[in-house]
Image (cartoon, rainbow, N blue to C red; front, top):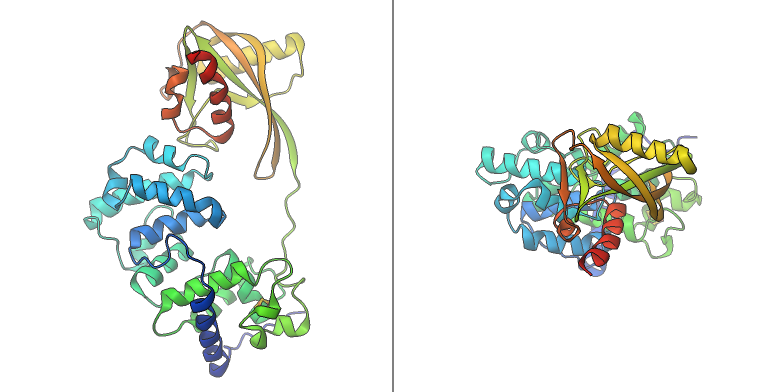
Length: 367
Ligand code: SF4
């Protein structure tokens, strides 16, 4: 069944939606640190941080980040390592690297003035259609639509669209619908109101239709189809894997390596880490020796297990066992590897599990 109409919604329906939504937003908008700003740099930072990340998680990061890099010029002037250190723990580190790269383009090609043209903004690293629409509408009040996770759900329900909204026909329909809703003025406020309603009222499960300002306009609510719209994609099956991390010690230093471009934590630093096959005994010792040598060019003598951390990354459930080891021979085979004192580890951007491991090293070393 596809109940959504391909025809544009009637003018009166759209006018009513705008009025109701803006009235509701004036009363119910949450106070968030990026609300009320028209500074495109601040809007941009908040939008990048909010991708796939909860508002409550983003707030302290956003505030610290802007304290460290108050302007796009400050961000461009920082090293990538410093930017990643400020992003550490927020995940999806590619976002931070692209933000930094884009800041450099804004400074070098646009004299630090954020471009106001859709094509120019979309040409910046890490800025897709949604982020460009959010920046242009919120910072410059341009009539640009937005479609992101919360509004996909809201639009699907307002259209009673029961097909996959992330497949090409659904995506096209939702972008057209979003564009058809835009008011002439206050476009940024309107777009933020849509996202707020999607996030706070039209939630994935049990949307609060009884307090929704759009309930009288909503065909999904009228048909009682909130549990079926939007159509959910099947989640990828979880895969369990085992990995090892090795803290290689040489005198009072440990070996760190920077993750390469094709690795999950590109640009971040880590202890040598790899998938593990062996369980114990000689086979385990031999696998640790061989894999550390292949990854780093350094020969080691494996030692005790330091800790085991269970964590999840995307669809992987990972059992990570960290071993200690002593340097036997050889120098790191490539750039992007360093012997560092444990007391220097706070200066390096590490992924979450490497940071946990590093915190176990500092007290014993500085004792
Ligand atoms: S009435 Fe319910 S389903 Fe419809 S938009 Fe509002 S919260 Fe979402």
